[in-house]
Figure (tube, one colour):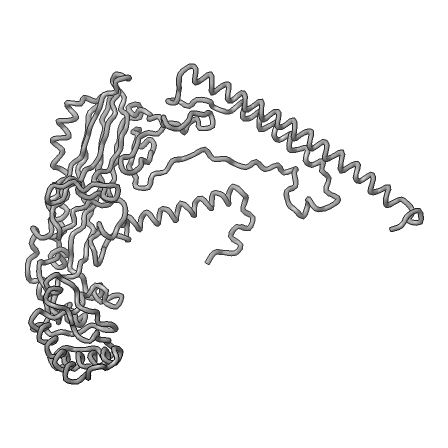
Length: 524
């Protein structure tokens, strides 16, 4: 609950900054949740991470059959485009990413939230047919023809309960049975699920139950990919050779992360095994723990856990035809091919950090934004994101550092309201008859000072945003036209204030005369 007096004594600018900070915090928390960053995605239960999360990851471009499945909602690459000028030094690229490995859920995780991860109990084919035949036989003999449908359903459900119990199935007291499993053979073959049992789960003995898959649990693993260093100035042939040599490093780093976890005590205990638990393992938390203790004696198989990912770092320099020695460079991490349906082939928490000498980074112009002196300093960006945005971290130890982001932002000039202390703005003060309108003369004075400050301090052109000579002349003329318009407006405001002041003085004089006029000379 918010503090009622939290804003007491806070200035208008401070309140604005507080509002922006709250909005930023809400956005950042949302980003962390939907991308699984931090504690939000450390463990994911019930589904593959790529089906639970919404951002921050790249999925394979090609499926197992070689078909291209990339789309706006299935992104296969993430990176940035930047301009590299001729300069001495090194351009470094660092990959940040994570992967998910499948693990065994604990009893606490399996039975949490009313056991939402526990698969629904179901008979095997022979037991299903046996139960159905017994239920149908008793229903035919015990339920007369013409019985109302509601009563017929209730009596059939009671018969189903007795038949299940007679077969050794545990039926919860509060369970509502659907009157037996009435799926036909065709439905069973098509994998149609059986009717639901409400308010409880049947305890079907192993001999009568189908086999189940282990409920899904995925653990996030950080991948430590090696650094890629590219010498400057850019030599496309040399960069292509170094990128080709680096190609296998991300894949080896991914496999090393999987193998390190599998070899660890946590991996040996909790790594997923390709097994099918019996029905009785899902009856109680103790039964599930006993089942886990038994299968932990089976060593995990890395071939079931480690996906054969096809990952590469694309480095593509293209010479600028209009600016010799300058290259447009695309640096992007690509996920090329799906490894398997049971493993998770996505790369998560993906980000690229690029570090280069400050003089080597050329600004990129926002050509589609109409140029104006209002936006001086906001018409260039350090790089353009590929399926994302780019954050400029500034100079770090003498190097310019850029990092990709899944929540791009574009900063705009901030318009700040001016406050004139001499002018009253409170309605209570303005409503008093004693308040003189002479205070409004501060308005044109403040406006005149503001126009002078704008004329002296406004920077019409920022470095890297220079245009043609004709465009620069047009910008200066537009600025001068605006100054003239503001001065004309200031003159109108000044005349309006003087008219109001004279009107108030005239009204006060008339009011005093009316009050002094003898009441006997007129009627009230």
